[in-house]
Image (cartoon, rainbow, N blue to C red; front, side, top):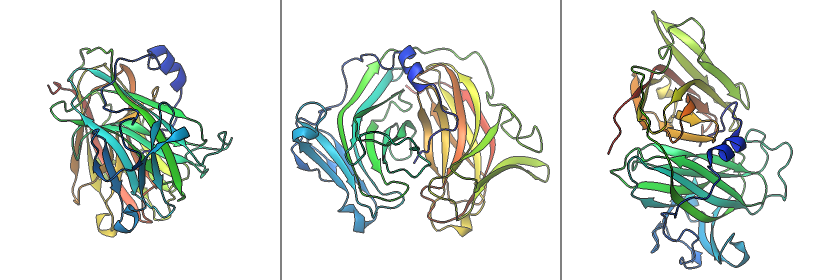
Length: 381
């Protein structure tokens, strides 16, 4: 689950200036408006139209996870749409997913879009509503996964606070064009559990104009990737909390070797997060390999997997790229985590690592970070 960026701004102005809100080319998904899908529950698996249906969670909860094709007045366009539903009893990583796999072309720019509506929401967004306020909402997870099982992602999680239709959009490039990419929308459990129903319609993937530039810089583009500049965190690195102060971050000196450590205790709420980040400029369409060494420092104290949000963020379009929810390997040693990024936009980006209280299951987590790198590489074909 991805919590919102700290200091995000300028989305609408950027989308208008960049043409992200303009008309797109013919779309690539089959049955995008669900008009050929029979009404009624959709079984887990793949439908005749190619939609992939997933129910994730405990066996006791899976038969309560709703994915069904609905007709009548529920659709945004045409006669049909799909409802995703969760009971109040969901917890942690229990959710429903609807998506479709498709083969993408190396070097092409794509845009994903879907319309979503939270049926139980109020007519207007409450003034105090935010992802950290605890205000009732529907959390929509809209992503493209580029490599099956463990691959890179592009997309975002969106909090819906009213019952109006909202279109979600983002741009991306295929980082692993030799494999089919999964474009999907999920309904996630709320940070404060409650019954939730969502309607989705008009799910599109389109090819859009883009350029492939050349990176003239060499070496590591991240400054002070090993935190050697001082005893405390130095610019251009930044660290901040959101939604609470139970997640701590500091530069640690271990016998002359410095690294950055984040720690949260078992009282950290589902509404809290903390982020380490640095801004850097990237070239549109150029391939970059981004790496970071991480160490799971309290592995013996946890019963559940440890997850670090790790990736790169485009602030102007509010889109996240990379592993995003990186599950740490069960090791007490330093492990290198890496991903390939193909920016669909040139200009400023933000490399980040983040801990979230959501899904923490009431357990503490301590993780150390070192040797962040970002280098231009040859793109996969």
